[in-house]
Length: 64
Image (tube, rainbow, N blue to C red; front, top):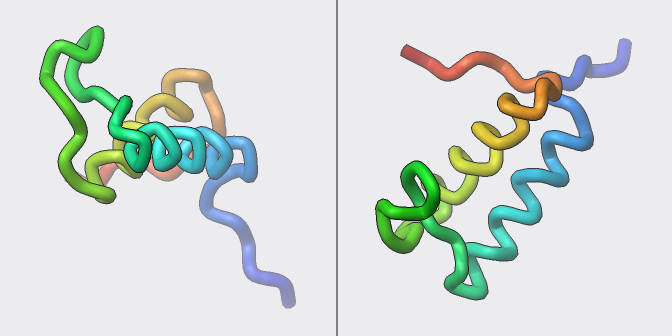
């Protein structure tokens, strides 16, 4: 039996794009990018997933 995907491939693309921005040093955090630069890989991944959720893509909920 094939393993079921937890999030969509297009959500993975959003994370990939955010990681690219992080590596170039252009990724910013907070509303409107007012929180400063993204400092960690985990932060960049979280932002990518958040953007995917806002677009309505299939992504698991945030852990509480």
